[in-house]
Amino acid sequence: MLIVAGSLYVDPAGRDAYLASCLDTVRQARSAPGCVDFAVSPDPVEPGRINVYERWESEEQLLAFRGAGPAEEQTVAILGAEVHRYLISAVEAP
Image (cartoon, rainbow, N blue to C red; front, side):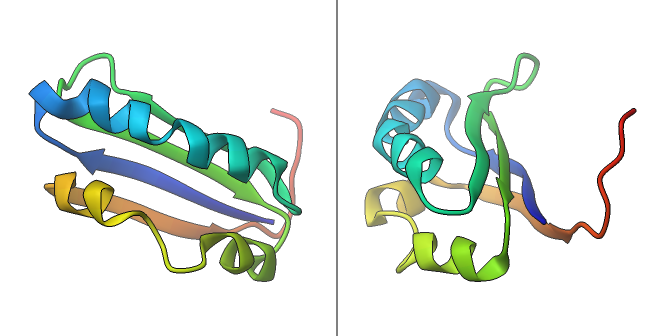
């Protein structure tokens, strides 16, 4: 199991447009082999922050989906990012 999680930072005035540009990617990811969950959402406190959460069955499936990465328009809009990949060895109930 693999989790990709963190935050992206965009111009607060362009956050809604950025999130709208992610809709097709979210739909594609959720239907991709090995994707357990995929979400990008606005942070309720910081107006320019977008929270990222992905859960994949394997790194191979994540990389197969990623391909070349985000569209250039999305990359240009990102002012900063703090996103990390976490390798999970076990899952337990809280």
